[in-house]
Length: 255
Image 1 (cartoon, rainbow, N blue to C red):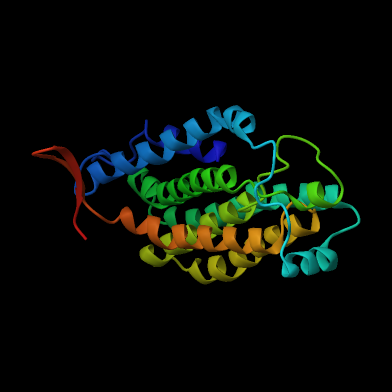
Image 2: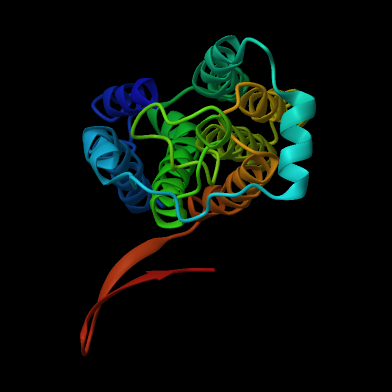
C-alpha cells in the first residue's frame, strides 16, 4: 500500500499528454478518487499505532466454532511462524505485485498519467476502504486468535482475529484489478481472475496454517474484499460533483 501511494502521488505531479489528467470529462472524478485513495491510505498508515492501543485486552468472542476447530487441526502447520511470514509476503508482496503488473501491462500499451490513475486508482481505493472496514470490524468483534485461545496470548493483536485483514486485502486487490482489466478490455483479465484468486486464496490458507485466523475469519475477509473489488472500481466511471442543498452539500453522481 505504501508503494502504491508513492506511485500515484508521483504520477499526479507529471503530465504525459497535452491535456492534464485533472481536466476533461473525468478530470474531477480522478481528483476525487485519487484524493480519497491516497489520503485514506496515508491516514491509515499513520494511525497504525493507534489501532494497537485500541485493541481489546479481553476477547468478546472467545470460543471457536466446530468447523473452525476442525479446520485448524487439519491445516495448522508445525512451523506456524513460517506460514505467517509467507502469508505476509503473499498478501502484501506477491499478490499486489502480480495484480498491478498485469494491469500495467495493459495500461502501458497506451500510456498516460490519466490512464495510470484510472487503472491504479481504483485498486488503491479499494484496498484502502477494505483496510478501514476490516479495522473497525476487528476492534468491534474482539475475536480471540487461534494461537491465543490454544497456546496463550502474545501481544496486543491477540483479540483481533475477525475478519482476516490479509484475506480481505488480497481479494480486494485482485478483484479490483480484474475489474479494471475487464472495463479496459485488457487481455490480462482471465489471468487476474484465475491466477490472482489462487494467490489470494493461498494467503488465506497460510493465515490458518500460521494459527493466526480461523476458517470463518478467512472466508469473511474474502467476501468483504471481493464485494469491495466488484463495486469500488465502478465508481471511477462516474461523473461525481458536489452540489449545494438546503441543508448543506451533497455528493452527486450519474449512475
